[in-house]
Length: 267
Image (cartoon, rainbow, N blue to C red; front, top):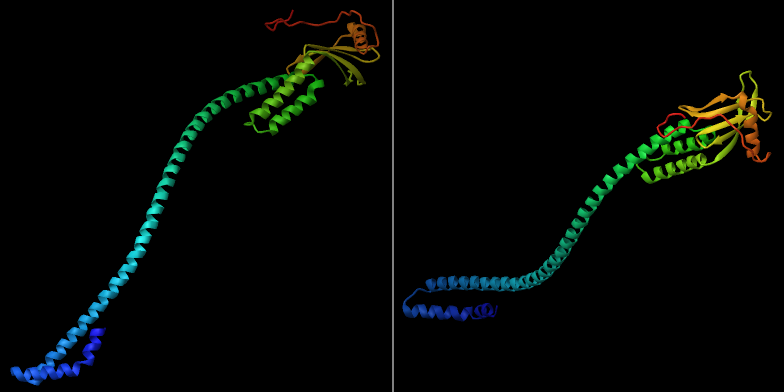
């Protein structure tokens, strides 16, 4: 910029100098003036180029500084990402190991589930057979258990087992004791009586009306208990009921009955 101002300020002096120089060396003033203009234009062009170069250099320095800072930031980010990637890889390896263990555990649990599910299916079938042959005294409790099994989730093994255990516990308690029940009974002649039924567990039962006019022997069958009239044992059965009700002192009574041997035959 200072050079340009200098040239502008001394252009007249330079022009006179060039004219004088041209007259000395024998050149025409017009040629000297043309050379000066070309030189002046080239000088201005050179100055403009230098200014652009300086501007570009300054701009590049500023951009380079920004780029250097960006590179530092990116390098820090890359280092952080590498650390996070390594940590995530360790987490993935750990989770993969846990998944493998869980898969093996799941397979073992599935085997156990299938096994116990089959056992519970067998228990349900046995429960249904017992329920069909159970006396009326147990009918409501066992039907309630059956309704719970039907309403529950078959895959919920714990719930199913609890229901079945509770039902079989009731059956076992009944089978181990002598239980009395009072039920209505319609006779062949149409009369309806309330009779006392004395159950000897699940093996046998005896029933009699309060007046001692009719008596029965009860035995489990395929679809419930069968009632067989025993007119010859009315007194003995009535006495047995009164002893149970503590209306009579204990006494020995002879009653009809059959005992099953271990092979299922009768003795």
